[in-house]
Image (tube, rainbow, N blue to C red; front, side, top):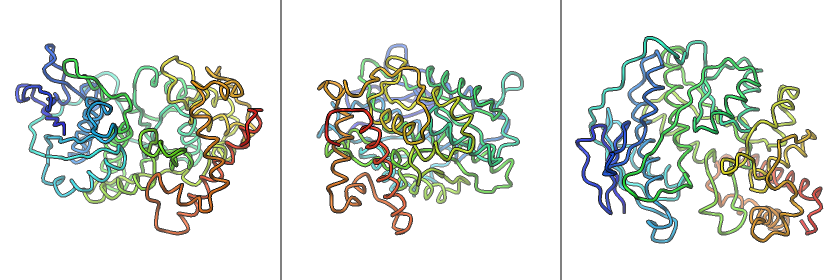
Length: 440
């Protein structure tokens, strides 16, 4: 088990050791490498918000920062006894630790579901003073907004904001602002002609000494939710008379469930960012700590192709779709790979919606060549094997449910399962059109 000790005062941090990583919370790392840091850039954005921010929402943000630090600073391959499941002990300073102590078991359940790791939390009273609001310069106005929406620069989130705008819903846009992500988001924002306020922030974890870092970042979505909950709570308290405010998380139903394509993907290669079980657990947490926030995925029952087909403004969608990003590996080259699972689903959605895919290049444009390349066909073959399995298995519901518990409401459960089946059918139809030379 690895312990991470967090403090906003770097003079209170214990020494770095093989079993303990000290982390300067909302500060800078030590020049001599004796402690790590996370969250410093957040302060620059938080002080641009005029409204007073809720202490519970700020504590939730601090918990998210600590979780991201642990996920980043503890390398999975070396620290997990089985090569996958790590065990953490986090000591975190909060404004109101007594509110959060009864929620530790629920937090452990949420984080185990999201990351596959074992989590232990210790909460203590902190003494951090949040920065004063800026009086001049760029500000982030919340007045006039009624909700928040995650805005990643992806195709799903682009459709999400198009559809919300058409319904006269006006969310603040929540984004991770890593350099290339931010440039894509800003470009898309301008192409869509948006006027919404943006909360673009980064956690910015900086490691201690020469400890290796983990690049998988399974908990990154928890940051997204914490950023969104902070803004949603402020909107609720200052502009909605305390009414529960929706935090929209637009994602197609196939990726949301993300059933394991092969047995080995049940753990390491699956993501649960918008899985309904994860979302339900978070909504329960918000209810328990009295945060006026409700997470909603408007596209839980739609495939990506159906999202494109049913978009409220297909003229705009056709113009901007090529500028969105679906690939999980695009930052390596600045170009979407074209062969990973998200890229394959993306390409299939264009095909299903009968919208020309004008994406500027894919690294691997021709899947008929990818299928012949043993070094690059893993994701493609996994999709093909999953489609074959779906056709043969007697009860696809059991296989689909391996990604996580589904709602007990039979109608909702069946809608989710049917969406996954339709999503795979979109991929099947697309792959059959690509003359791969294999049975699908």
